[in-house]
Length: 429
Length: 93
Ligand SMILES: Cc1cc2nc3c(=O)[nH]c(=O)nc-3n(C[C@H](O)[C@H](O)[C@H](O)COP(=O)(O)OP(=O)(O)OC[C@H]3O[C@@H](n4cnc5c(N)ncnc54)[C@H](O)[C@@H]3O)c2cc1C
Ligand code: SF4
Ligand code: SF4
Image 1: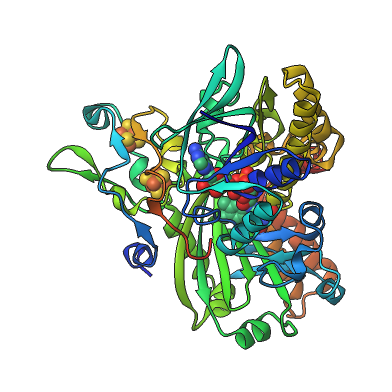
Image 2 (image 1 turned 30 degrees about the vertical axis):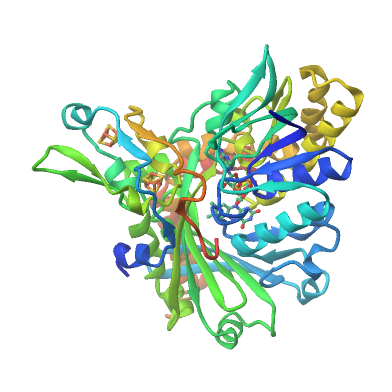
């Protein structure tokens, strides 16, 4: 059996970041990936954040296959054909970028090439089927190939949201409709001038739009539209449980979103090139798996590190991967891969924004699960209120304001609104 | 756009072996009211066959998302990844 210092399962952002940091610290490191090459099995919206990615590959954005630097981000509430929107724009983010749109097949492949430059060996088209143990200590992996056992001092599980290995290892629980969202997305091509005109962008700049409310038929989740170089990424993602209850199919929900007047106009004349589907972990802080035990650590989506509210997942994946890679190198150099030693990994995440943010939003999923009306009633009230306020028909403004309040309280009682504000406050602030 | 036309755009390297099996087909008929697998799968891999009284599985169109596994809370779906190098292979991601 061939032996390595570190075996990483999965060549997504979490696994590749882990491998890069372990290899840079001198560890003999391999990444096992089930796709033809890293990226071919991976899907995201996808907005990639500059600072966290810079920590893994400094100044990556100057040469990596990225699509557009994001200079404008819009958030909208949809109700029927109506839409209320807020946005932030800063053209300075063109040259001092904060985030870029990316296509994961290209980006992950490039990141895997950076890993190779750092000395990592990538083994594609290979599935890890189980972990190997020596007593309680994880000691390697069993792959789907003949003579496929490989030994390691430390295994890092970066298998993504489908946590089969983490479950087998007794670290995580199987996914449940309450703690995952299902997302479907399309890539729709458009000439770059059209994209820039429709989204009010200078050449090369990018924009994002997240739409809540009727974009997902009021189901907890979002519709998103991101600009790529010569295509648009458009998709919807919702929690699985309410999707099941409300009997939608993911594709029908995406078509419902695409048919909204505001959305339709942005896509007009475009051609769909690809249809994609993926899960998103939504368990949050209260459903974190065990992050480590003797000889093994869990990173990225497998560790449920996702902050959907701020659309942050890839960054949590990369930072957690990097931290695990560093801890692996320290433990191996010290000749001690015990559980106690690997606890340093969890401490790193707790000291950083990764677990601080998840802890901060720990009440969020329960709140929205227990209050499924939030994304139904409020987009309606807000759109209706805006429509009434902007209607010019000779009604004095004071009277109109009273009418607006009456309309709102008819849809949701005063105590109901107070309760919602308190709940949302507690969940989000 | 119809789902079938969308799936036609997806690149697959289809394995001859199916990677999906219903563990107990009679359970779907006798005990499962909602048959959520027929709705939640983004690729409509599962279809209720009224004549055969069982779920028909079109594994070739599977996008490997894992939704069906989470959704079938009776755990009646035996699903594993297609062999290394087989299955869906995204062009953009
Ligand atoms: C629709 C959608 C939109 C999103 N939008 C954003 C966004 O805009 N910004 C953002 O930051 N995040 C976003 N996310 C979240 C982000 O995609 C994830 O958090 C991130 O990809 C997690 O990285 P990972 O490396 O943990 O997992 P993955 O990227 O899923 O990588 C896992 C890898 O492991 C491989 N693998 C799995 N099992 C095995 C095995 N047994 N053997 C070998 N290889 C295996 C897979 O092929 C894959 O390459 C989005 C997610 C979705 C689904
Ligand atoms: S959801 Fe599960 S039990 Fe129900 S029909 Fe589908 S496979 Fe059978
Ligand atoms: S993994 Fe996804 S695409 Fe494949 S059968 Fe299950 S739900 Fe359908």
